[in-house]
Length: 74
Image (cartoon, rainbow, N blue to C red; front, top):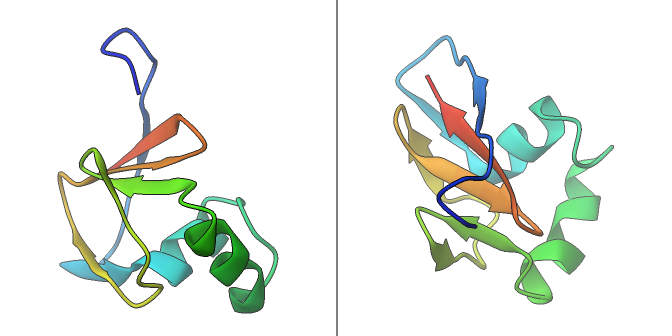
């Protein structure tokens, strides 16, 4: 992710959401099973670090990128 990439804000209702749930909410995947190959291929980053855990807890302010397209939790 480059600094000039536009970041899409995604609003969550609680304090936390799991990575697999977020990817479904953002429309990046249709089902939870679709998340695993993306993680295995290293295509998902959380705050700039490659993430491999589907159940990773995310909090407001975290920036998640799928193949370079960033979203921020608000």
